[in-house]
Picture 1 (cartoon, rainbow, N blue to C red):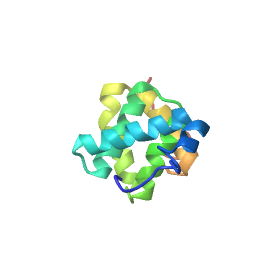
Picture 2 (cartoon, rainbow, N blue to C red; picture 1 turned 90 degrees about the vertical axis):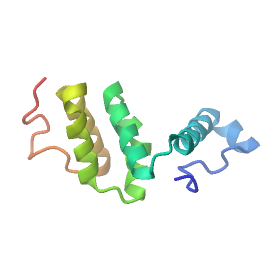
Picture 3 (cartoon, rainbow, N blue to C red; picture 1 turned 135 degrees about the vertical axis):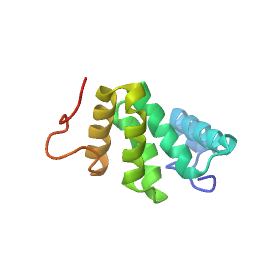
Picture 4 (tube, rainbow, N blue to C red; picture 1 turned 90 degrees about the horizontal axis):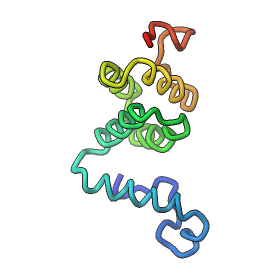
Length: 122
């Protein structure tokens, strides 16, 4: 990840900062946090996804992290496993909402069968 740019063409340049200063700042913060974390890329991204679920983030918030996880080859089973691991702590409603958003955005089958809410206890 340290060598990758995640949609940050021009980050740190004058024109990039003028065009998208908030996005550029977020990208730089993400890269700094990864470098300082000491985690491998997969663990880092799964941890971020878990934090997004815990915060009740909007589906758009998953795009960067789930997309980056997909880019480095994190299997969907690892994302699913992360959701299962945090469910008892953050609650099923947040996990189902997150799984639905991730599933819709990336076509990942994170929930059983046809009903997203099947088996959910809120």
